Each structure stands twice: as structure tokens, then as C-alpha cells.
Length: 222
Image 1 (cartoon, helix red, strand yellow):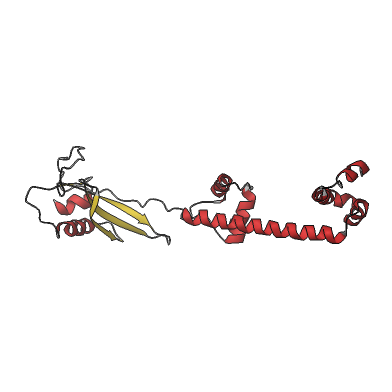
Image 2 (cartoon, one colour; image 1 turned 90 degrees about the horizontal axis):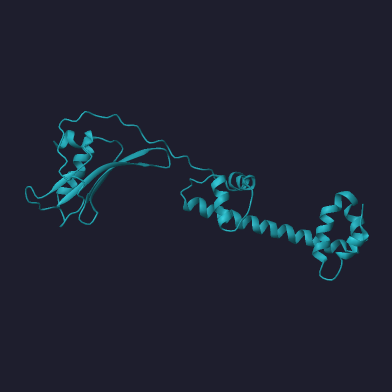
């Protein structure tokens, strides 16, 4: 049922935009042309309103897409549409997960990068077990007094893995040497240690090298 009082009220001064919204809400029930005549609105004015509104919607959509790209790349591509929706909410953009999923996948071609599982390693049997001379004392009074070494791995975007062996000086936590290879071997540990020792002038017995006693370390260094 069409309420004449309501329709006349929305045409008061300053209520033109309200009249347009009224038409959009009831045009299926009464028809656009009949509502335009009943409300005394020029068809060109109404269609210009819809044109500008569509342009505003498109501009807002592009703005949201820019925000999505910025967040996605700043987080190295790990965000899916669920976490992206939460990040956008913090920035003041309130959208459903379905909409963000559509913007990311169809509009931008962005998908969450699944981090590969940690590569498995087979524990080796130590050739020799050394005493823990460091004994959790990670303080050093001078450079080249205490070094620590360990392995880590780096996952590349193409799914490959690179292994890194690094040695740090506990005096200032600086990196003394770092070597990366496709394989985690005892040779990688030896090359890293050699790289660390070559430029140094160390006195015998003046340096303590601490590791987690992984088989790659002490198999060759013992």
C-alpha cells in the first residue's frame, strides 16, 4: 500500500536524497515511472543520481582494493579473506567476508600463500659429545670470546627450501659469518666456521664456540 503522507513528507526541502532511496526501496512494488510521477521527480534527475551513486560505489570499491593489495603485500601474501576482512575492519572498512573473498580472488587474483611444512630431518648419532662449557652464560666481556652457531631454514616462494648456518658473537650479537646452501650438511657448518675464522687473529684457547650439538656440527668439527 502506498502511503501518501509518507511520500509527501520525504519531498520536504532537503529530502531529495531520501526520495531517491524511497524509490529504490519500493520501485518493484509500484514501478519507477509511477513513483517518479507521484513524487513529482524529473526522470533525468533520478537517473543522474543513480549514475553518480554507481560511480561513487565504483570509486569506493577501488579504494578498498588498494587497501587489500597494500595489506596483502606488506604481510608477504599470507592473509586469506577472513584475516583480510579483520584488517580492513581496523582501518574503518566494514565488509562481509564474502565480499572481500570476491574482491581478492576475482577482482585482484590474490590468494593466501600457504606456508610449507617445516622440512623433516633425520637425527644423526653424534661422533663425540662435548661438555656444555657455556652453561647458559650468554654474556661476553669482549669480542671473539664467545660465539654461538645454529642452523635455520628459509622457505622460498616457489616452494624450495634453503638452509642457513650462522655464527654470532655474543659480545654484541653481531653476525660473524653466514652461509646458505640447498642442503643441510656438515660441510655447510665447516664452511661457515672457516668463513668466520679466516679474517680473525685469535689466540689459542681464547674462543668458545657453542652449538646445540647437532650432528652436522660436531660430526666434522670434533
